[in-house]
Image (cartoon, rainbow, N blue to C red; front, side, top):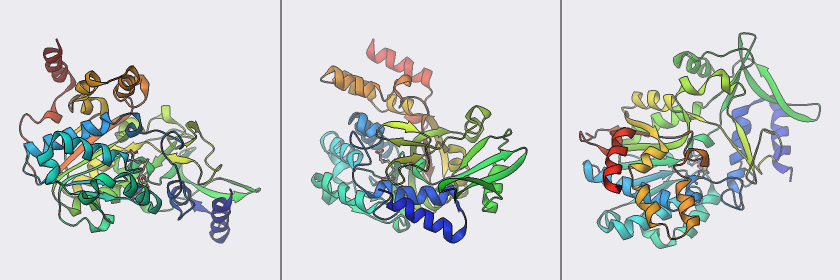
Length: 374
Ligand SMILES: C[S@@+](CC[C@H](N)C(=O)[O-])C[C@H]1O[C@@H](n2cnc3c(N)ncnc32)[C@H](O)[C@@H]1O
C-alpha cells in the first residue's frame, strides 16, 4: 500500500525537500502507482464524481453546443478532448452526435489527449463503437488544429505550488520528511515564475493565508494557443477569477483530497489512492491565453452554459424521477455542479456572429425560455 509513499520519501531524502507541485504530480501520475494510473479513479468505485457521472445529458448538451458552434462559424467539425478520464464523456458526445447530428458526426475527427496510460486503455474499451472516429495523440502533436478543443475538470488536476504569507513574508510550502512524517515546510520560492504570477495578478494575502498557484495551466494554455490554427478552446472546471479566488475567506487555499467520495485534507495519507485537486484560476487562462492569440469570448457558469445548450429539453425527456434529479443536479446550485463550476470559451482566428448563443446573459435566456416553456 505504501510503495508510492516510500518512493516519495526516497526522493525527498535525495534532495532534502520537494515542492508540493512535485509531490502532487507523483501522487496523481507516477507510472503505475499514481491515482490516475490505476484502476477506478472515477464513479461509484472511485473517489469522486464529475458532471459526466451525473448524467449522459452533460455530454448531450456539449455535443449540441459543439454542433451549434461549428454551424455558426467557419471551423471544421474536429473535436479534441484533453484529459478524457474514463472515456464516458467522449462516448456520450459522440453517441449524441451520431443520432442527432449525423452529418456533423460523419465529418468529425475526435482527438483525445490523455496523460494516463491506464486511462487510455480504458478509453479504448468504452469507445469501441466510435473507434474509427478517434485518434489518441500527445499534447505536443496537436499541430495546426482546426476545431474545438475542450476539457472538463482537467486543469484542477494539474499540480499546484502552495504559497503562504507568514507575517508578510511570501514563502512556498515544500514537502519534507521529518519525524517519520511527510509534512509541509516553508522556504523561499522555488521559482521566480511564482513571484511573477503573484505580481501579475496583483494577489494580496493576509497573514497565514495560503494560495495555490497552478503554473502548469499557464504553460498549457500558451501551448494550446500556439497549436490552434483556427477554432475554440472551451475549459470547464471549478474555480474563479484570481480576484475572487485568492481571498481571505479561502485562507487555507483550495487544495483538497477525495477518497471514496469523502473530502479530506490529509494530503500526505493514502498516497496514490486518493485524488488531490485545487480550484483553478481562470484569470491565468484568460491572460496567458491572450499571449497566444486566444481571445476570450465568454466566461459563464456551467449552469448557464448548459441552459444555452438544451438542458431543459433533457430534463423534459427524462424517463424516470431518478434520471430527472440527476440531470437537474448539473444546474442546481445546492447539488454541487451548479456552484463554482464555470465555462471559459476562447477563440482564435474565428469571428463569432453577433447573436452568438453563448454571449447571452442569464436574464435574456430566461426571457426566451419562459416564452418557449409557457
Ligand atoms: C479529474 S479527471 C477528469 C476526467 C474527465 N474529463 C471527466 O470529467 O470525468 C482529469 C483527467 O485529466 C487527465 N490529465 C491530467 N493531466 C493531463 C495532461 N497534462 N494531459 C492530458 N491529460 C491529463 C487525467 O489523467 C484524467 O484523465
